[in-house]
Structures are given as C-alpha cells and as structure tokens.
Image 1 (tube, rainbow, N blue to C red):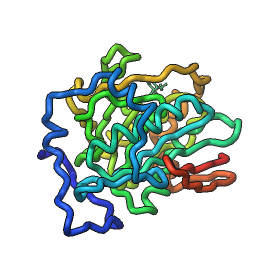
Image 2 (image 1 turned 135 degrees about the vertical axis):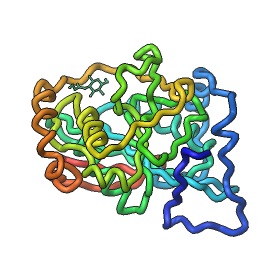
Image 3 (image 1 turned 180 degrees about the vertical axis):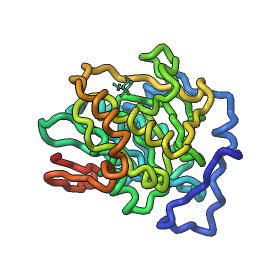
Amino acid sequence: NKYLYKHVNPKLVMKKSKPDCKYEDTLHSTKSVHTWEVTNQKLNFIPKGIANGSYTPEDCNPAFSVAILVTYRNRQSQLDVFIPYMHNFLRKQNIHYKIYVIEQQDDKPWNKGLLYNIGAKQAIAENFPCLILHDVDLLPLDENNLYACLHQPRHMSASIDKFRFVLIYETLVGGVLAITSDHYKQLNGFSNRFKGWGGEDDDFAGRMSANQFVILRFPQHMSRYTMLLHKQEAKNTARYDIMTQNEKHGAKDGLNSVHFESISVKPQRLYTLIAVRV
Ligand code: BGN
C-alpha cells in the first residue's frame, strides 16, 4: 500500500524463523466488524502474551510498532471498557503496540496537551517510531482501520456515532490521531497552555498546517468509532485567546517546555500507567 510508512521499533529483535506479518487482508478486506459483535467480545477475552500493556504477534514479524497514548482522569468505568476492547481489536492487526495511560492525578484544570507531551516523551525514549493519540471514550468499529502511522499525520476517528458519523469540520484532529514521533518532535508537540476542555487539538492542527503537513484520513466507513457516554468537562473559556496568542509562541511552548510537579511510571499488565501531578 503506497500510503504506508513502514517502521519497526529498532528495539524489536526480528526472529528469522518467523515470516513477516501480512497486512493486505486487513487493509483491503470489505468485511467490517459489527458493533455488537466486538462489544460482546470485550468482556470475556483478553489475549495472552501482554505485559506492561504491550503486545507483539506470536507467529510473524510485525512491520508496525506503535505507542498508544491515552490521556485520562477519573473515568474508571470507561477505562475498564476501553483497555480490554483495544487489546482485542489491536491483536488482530498483527502489529506491535504498547498502551500508555497518562493520568492527571490532581484536581487542577485538565491539561491534555501536557499529558500528551509527557506520554510522547516516554514513548520516544522507548524508541517508538509512531504515536497514536487516543481519547479513552472512543472505540474503533472497523478492523480495517489499521493502527499505524502513514507518511503524513492521519486523523483516524473521522466518523463518530455521536456526530452521526459525519466529520464535523475539515481540520478536526481530536479523537484519535496517528503521527510519527519525528513529526511530533518537528511540531514541538502540543501546547501546554490549554487548561480545561477544548482547543488544544485545534492548536495542534494549526502547528501541522504551519509545517505544511496535511491531514490524511482513511475512507469514512473505515474511520467509524463509537463514543462512550460521559458528562461534558468544563470548557476552557480562554481557549480562543490562547489559540490566537499561540500563533506566536509555538516554538517555545510544547515538548521543549514540559513542566510538572511529579511523575511516576508504573507498569501494569494491560497498560503502562504514567501518573502525573501537573
Ligand atoms: C471543537 C473543540 C475541539 C474538540 C472538537 C470536537 C475548541 C476551540 C475553539 C476555537 N475546539 O469545538 O477541541 O475536539 O470541538 O469536540 O473548543
């Protein structure tokens, strides 16, 4: 597939005895997964071979290695659905992946951009070449939606049931986004200045366009997600102002200006928890 940007984590040792994993079926199959079918599986099956939230196919050498970064606070019931669901979904894709949950463990305003930067630093330190930024309330519905980075950033969640499966605006990159670690670094990551709900993703889209990146998307039917229900977070009323100011500050505000009170990395079986106090 000409869109794919193959990259394997250099740390992964390829075993000669294994064949390379195949992806054509995943990408070109017309079969898609029905919501109820996948939803049912989540409760009763967690694949073997997972440690620290990481999985690698047993029978073949994966061509893709991805870190899934999930920002999180106080949504235990969603995490309980999300984590097993994702392991079931991802293990069928023949990729090597690791799920990181970056939890803001304080009562200060939610800072999603900062949490993504912290997760990205950890994943990059562990040599992951591809980052998938993922909301905890979104579950992918189509197995053909391959969790891999392309040669340009890809907005993976263009078609969400909550929005009647319609892309609400062309520059939306929130929800689920796949971006190479190199591109993430080139953009200096997310702004750390958005406190409260909203805007940090639009600001990130602004960084992408300032760097002449384009937003790729798979066809709509492959980009379907279902959203778990929750109460809307308090919106950040300053978000418009910050966006306007940030057009000048991008170079100083991001991956290179991450500050927090404390951090700890705690590997668990189904995910690696990065606990942060901002
Ligand atoms: C937008 C939010 C995004 C959010 C999407 C989808 C803002 C900034 C306004 C300048 N943007 O309205 O952050 O991902 O909705 O919910 O609020």
